[in-house]
Length: 113
Image 1: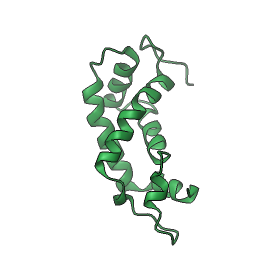
Image 2: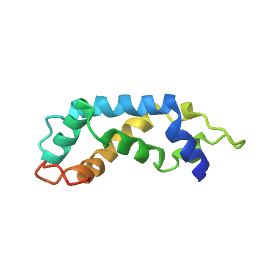
Image 3: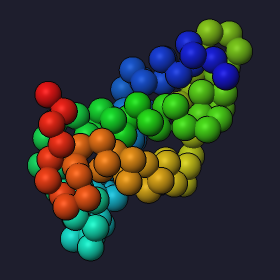
Image 4: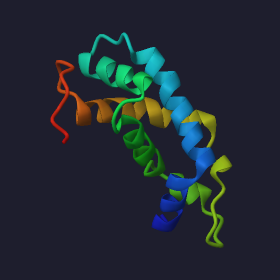
């Protein structure tokens, strides 16, 4: 895996937009989830609060095989090589992780100051 590719992907505007879209779409699905931390995280994403969206991006670019997938072997990346289905799967898998970073199991915000 190339950390350079991972770093380039994190600042790629097209990829950032795609991750943001997937996260917002899934947040709308999870906003009424029976797990309070997941619902709180989803609502925060929909309100465009804090660092949740940035955490989703960081986890997406660090996803299994993602940096390798986009690496063109010449110091450049092609973010389009990550499919929408992969982004959806990453976002769904990362929702509990991001929720736990920012909210306790009751949905109360963690002190992340």
